[in-house]
Length: 274
Image (cartoon, rainbow, N blue to C red; front, side):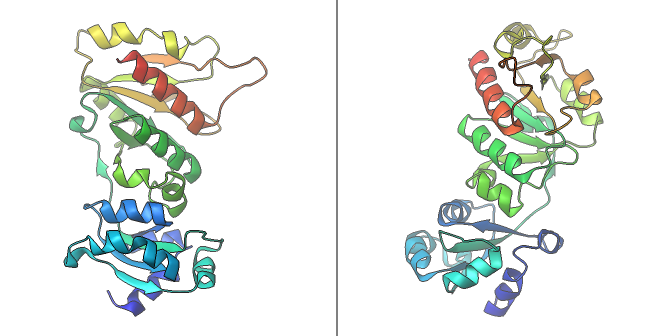
């Protein structure tokens, strides 16, 4: 890639539709860029960095094989701020090739805990969910309909690069995939604020995992279903769930932010699977 090619891409840093159409995503900050450069599944097209950031990233760039080293353009801080439209404190923007997300297959959720997002539209929430899911050993993130792009730069930044090291697949075709998950032996747990639902700490999960539903072995995977910031899960998702569970809250609070709720639910379910 030439410097002119990189400069053209950089002028569209704040234009997600342009980047998506050309198969490019943006990662911002030194920490996230380090994770990106260390991920062999991604081709990094180039970096735009301040002199300070160039020095800070020199070790990881020099450790790469010559054919994987990206083009590096050193630029003033003010120019980076103009590209990103905010003060970029770590002085680094990376551009990488993106590939379409794979569709779910049973191997993606075989064993362990995975999370399926439905209509989670805020990229900050998608990024936060990816970060906590990565921290707690979630196997796979399944992206249902109308979710924010996990490779939108804000989602990557909020996740602190966790989306770059997480298995992320599409939950398609929707809603048929819900029955396909169950047919593959997955146990579906739907989150809900419904006060009549059992506490997620006492939702009958252990018998479910031990014996399964409908005579099937359920040790092949557990799927946590989380819904949109406003409406929650759709009727199709709730009806498909084997269990509905809630996070207990004080009487004057009706719900939690979806990213916070997902982190709590993942922690609680992980403990129940031990």
